[in-house]
Image (cartoon, rainbow, N blue to C red):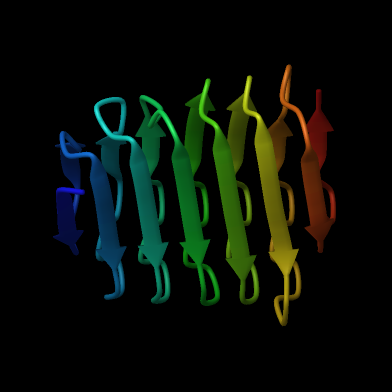
Length: 151
């Protein structure tokens, strides 16, 4: 595979045009309000490992095979917006207190979906909206206080 690794982009727009695209946001506000388009990728991974590192991120354009989101600390992915459609595998992990609070996860027409909201994170997915229309083999677990799940 040809990979493209992006680190702490700041606000702006990124088109991932490689087969494997990895974005690492490991500083506070490192990828704040960044827009990612993963439609030209086979695999896209966004890793948010610091406080508010992916606040307000928007992901559009789905990779063909794999979409991975890792929010591994408190408040890392608050208010994130994800639109993934017609992708084989989607894995979303929200760890840490309020890590994915107020997130909107549109995961439609996906073969395998795994959304984990918890593992040490109180309110990890508080007030999250999850749309799973026409997705198969769906597994959603963890702290989903005030969550809305459709599909």
